[in-house]
Length: 280
Image (cartoon, rainbow, N blue to C red):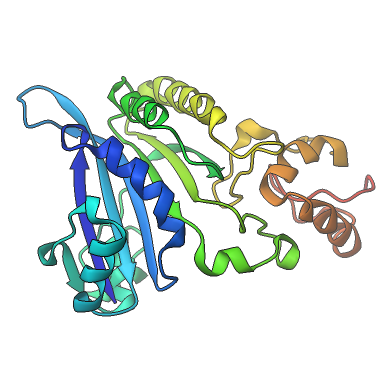
């Protein structure tokens, strides 16, 4: 595979380039995956900060095929050969994990990455954001509490557009431009409140651009702000629907029926597990 990274900060028109990316990323060939990571970094001006949009991609092919493809479909990015690296697919897993690509056995090391406390939220975006909206989103990373904040934005489209919502529990497929994963970490518990409050403000800001009717969310990044099962006692379908429909949309009803058949006593449970229909 070929991977690439092209970094653009606010002074390098990151906002405009992202605005263009969101309109074409889901239309790119299905053998090309692209994403944008947004974070705060040091500016070239001493003592100042800026926001970096790191455009990343993985292409199931060689550099010589990728470069003209991007130059035609997305010339604003300015992709060059020095931005690209060919490697094995398993090495690309390390690359996107910000780890050295050798040795690949590091994937067996559960402590390879530092463990920090974090708060995460997710969104699915179905309509392009305005340049003003993108600018406001990026400027929020210049606030306090964002030293360890990142948003990972991954393009959809391709094969995902061909899979019906009800084919698997994961329903977020056709019509989605990109998924946004908002993450903030902190090294000291003293910073927890500041970081979590910033995350909630960011999530509130993005409500204008997120999917409507049901504001969809990704179950693998559990967000307990959306609601939880009762610690003691039965959790009703109506109560669990508050978060269940965000994660699974209409598939939630089927999952509840299956849970009721397989585990009616709710032995396997957690804060946001599927509840059975009847109280055990």
